[in-house]
Image 1 (cartoon, one colour):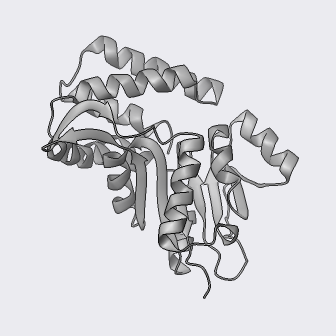
Image 2 (image 1 turned 45 degrees about the vertical axis):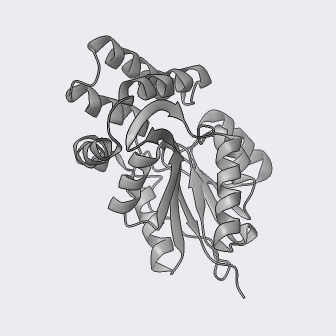
Length: 242
């Protein structure tokens, strides 16, 4: 996705008067930093998460799920890279499972995954009691090493062989996840991920210009699936060959 999904979610909540103008300005600055610097700043990410948790505290889960559907249509649908969409569709057409794995709230992750026809999604989980958000997290934000652990747990639960899966990400923060699989890809990578990918001979793809985004091939190994994280994160996982 062009830009961070949590920022687009924040825009939608601001439109619905969940918070004030100064909070939106902070979200905008964090978004501008990501676009200009080409990488996620951990401090900005933490501030965004803390702000989001305080904003939704006291609101019902069902309310945010419904609003998430509207926000997807308003701000996210047109910002998903066509190359990313085509890649996910190629894995699905090959009979492989595709999962979205992101640090964004799981409610938003589920909306994006369902709208794209993906198998499912993993995301950061906000605590709720009796259907109402408490302002706390369940476990850690799904970011960096925590995302890799979530993928490892998913693979164990689904009976997947990660050596036959592919991972896709645009962020160096997802190097732990990319390192789990047999087919890692750097997609629209930030500078640190691009450098790391070149050093390890990982495949690179760039969808940010029409010239570079011509065609994408999925891994050729028989029965292989794919995994991806980052701002535009998608995972396709195929069951282990029996």
